[in-house]
Length: 285
Ligand code: AMP
Image (tube, rainbow, N blue to C red; front, side, top):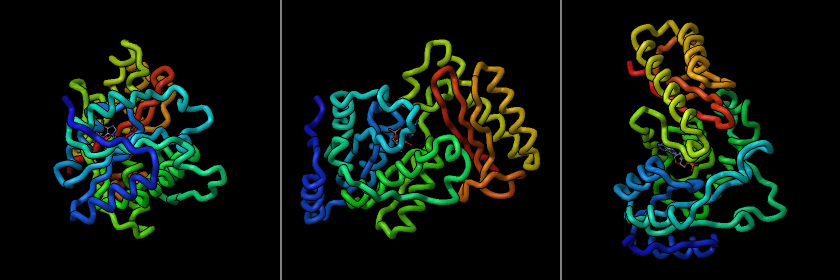
């Protein structure tokens, strides 16, 4: 039986709960998610629980980070199962607010992070990172945790959040957690549930391609152009349709590089049928 966990719907209740913990000198970790939790999310919860006395998992499908033609309505939701999963790991609270609790009808303020959002997913998902940055800023200010946990699976998002916390002087440690993968290398994602059996098999070509490029560039740092062209071809050959990007970028600035001379990662986003998959891997040098 999972241990009891408090489900909270209101920001005011969240503040009271955290204030009590602070008074008792308990450290607090925050794990923001959109639910439909899998082992990737649970790795964040485990890390938070290892670092902090108290852990809050947030569950909020944030409408402002979805574009008009994206999968907001179809996004998988299963609060009861999510609650049991995080309770079993010892999380202390589930913060699951409604949309109206998070956004007043006259909400007019947006957090946007320049530069880091110019490349990779930025141009393909207009407004997405502003939606993410705004909701994460709100969650951080609502809960004022010691640390907040995000996956390297969404590496651009992780860097955007690190930057907004720094630029806005939010006193929180942003912790990146390595990507959790299935046995064939596919990064776990709530969106993998959309894949047919055949698409699921083809999807493993993405991590295979990223691993190959990361390995090749470690030996041949000048061959970025050739590797990117090969990577696009490899995805196409495996059955991917539209390829949004295959890029090699500086790990800090996320600006594309033409040769690898410092910390860099290989990034990809591409469509399998109606499902958009993203992933990234570091070049080990
Ligand atoms: P989401 O529910 O997709 O918004 O993801 C919530 C958090 O879980 C984000 O910080 C993601 O980067 C992280 N996450 C999602 N999938 C994985 C994964 N396979 N491994 C590690 N972290 C993940």
